[in-house]
Image (cartoon, rainbow, N blue to C red; front, side, top):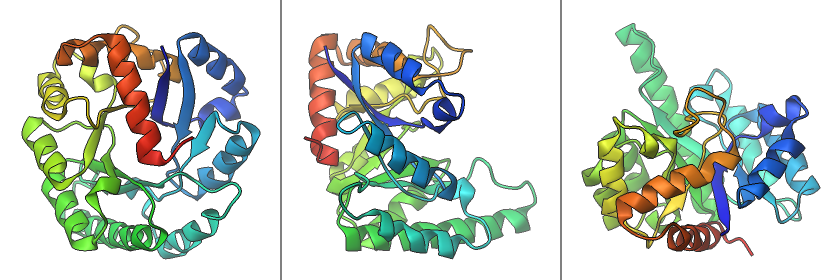
Amino acid sequence: MEWIDSHCHLLGFQKKNELDDALTRAKEAGVQRFITVGTSQEDWVPYREIHAAHPGVIDYTVGLHPCHVEEGWEEAVGQISSFFMPPQAPVALGEIGLDYFHLPKDPVQAGEVILEQEAAFRQQLLLATELDCPVIIHSRNCFEESVRLIDESGVEWERIVFHCFSYGPEEVRQINARGGRASFTGIATYKSAQDVREAVRAQGVDRFMLETDCPYLTPEPHRGKPNEPAYLPHIGERCAEALAIDTQELAARATANTKSFFGLE
């Protein structure tokens, strides 16, 4: 059984000299390929280097996460296109989007942050149309706003994945109706996350993708520990249960979908 972790953050493992061990544990669990996702200038170059050191095993993406949209973000976004050059080009632009969960408590400051996040999101969506590449969306507590900006951008929805999907079945239906898809994390294993499991069922297997989003959102039964790619099968098993299909079938479908979405060989 082969799995692909379609969204993880491996820089922390590298900094602690633990990347090789993490990859070994993952491969022992059946996770054969990894997409390590950029969030800021701090990780873009290291991820390109990690990809170069592990060709065909680790792919990477470049994008400015909404929580990293700070003063001078325009310069950072202006550097993104330079990464999309062979032979070490990223497989997608992301993660980008909006995050209303981490806004300042002061309403005036919150409004200012939202405006900057939206501007950075628009700019990166425009870049995605120019690069004609897949896009990984971060959207937290702002579903309607995220969809509106994507609709306005002209990006083809078939190139869109809402990563770490934490909304419900109605929202995933709206994404699917437009041609987009959702990717699911360890949240789907949490007892309280019935809405997310209903979203899993609503999307079905045709566009299904899985991710750990490690080191965050550790799935059951390892919740409370740092997350890692080796735990991806636990998420797959719980999602297969929600979909009432065999875990091996889900692994095959999720792997094929991920390869197709990112253009992996």
